[in-house]
Image (cartoon, rainbow, N blue to C red; front, side, top):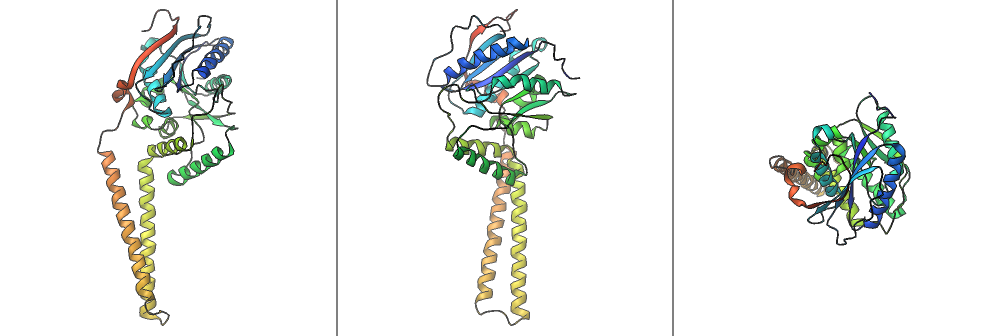
Length: 336
């Protein structure tokens, strides 16, 4: 049944942070104001992704709706997507069964994911007849034209290789009961949104405008965009390899057909030019050999990856957490 809009909910929130503590302080104040107005409560988990700056938010004693603020310090920088994975692992393992939050929010801490949109995510969740993941689809973006251009290229490449495209980012609301399966999914270590899409769990898409940063410039550059795109593609590695094998088989079939046509022209017509048939057949044979070599390598790589143990965030990566620092806590009784 849909949530009663008048029921007070308890949520947890995961936000990765890299040298962006001023923005995190802004986000905390905005979240407390929004949750106080809605009557819900929140636990905030900020993942310090190996920041070189140490300027944690202070003076948090006047918060009213946020119950718990914790900084998860990682030993080194692992990247935005993997920082999210580590935050979800901590949240997934932090609560006893009788004190688990109703849902988990994932968002950036820099203001581009607008905290003012969280009530819309919760309303979309409440409107569903069964638990669903509500993801934010960008209705309007504020990046430069160059960034938007490369992002469109990435989406088209993804669609060409996988067969569909990802039309949402990290900003979402997850039912807490879905969290255990996610943190034991090896794909989560590479790309959060692609993992949600591949998990085949029910998704509700909600169009939300992207906000503007609270402070400073975006850390995403061209290199980061390329890595981000490749990480998403890696979640569908087996599907991509399969589509490539089908493509190489089709190309090889066309090349074989071309050889038969050339042979037919030589044997049954007077159209062949001296030396032309040999060159054409040689060229087509080279194409066939290249397709066979590429197919063989693709099959080998696919079998190699499937026969080796993959990284499971909840099982293998806890050693990356250097410290869990509680900045603020007013839970009763204490949960830790």
